Amino acid sequence: MPLKPVTCRHCGEPFISKPGKPGYVDECPECLHAKTAVPKPIEARIVEILGAMTNAKARTKAMRALKRSLLDLGVEESAADKFILSSVEVIAGLREQPKLS
Ligand SMILES: [Zn+2]
Image (tube, rainbow, N blue to C red; front, side):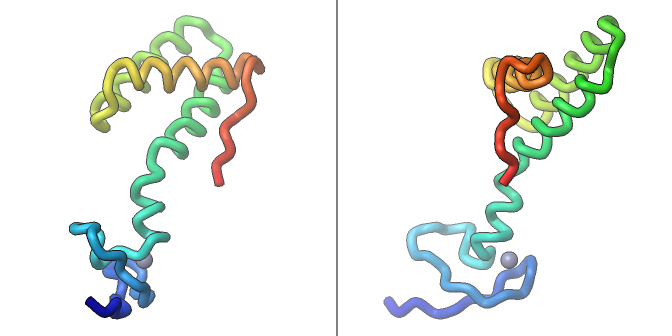
């Protein structure tokens, strides 16, 4: 089967669709990446929000709200906990912030 360039339905750029990936036939790798890379901006936001808070009660409240949003996004509870923990570790300086590239 010859590979024909397809026009991306998001950005309009032509690209070569990889066979064997149903559902992604009309989305270029860039747009697909932008869609699937959702957790990274969220982690950056968690770091930002929690880092800006000096009040412990407000921090606890914010963490609960963040966990709820993660669960709403379809993240499993254990994964959400790990995610928040790693973010808090970044804030505490125990860990380097994940690269957002
Ligand atoms: Zn695209």
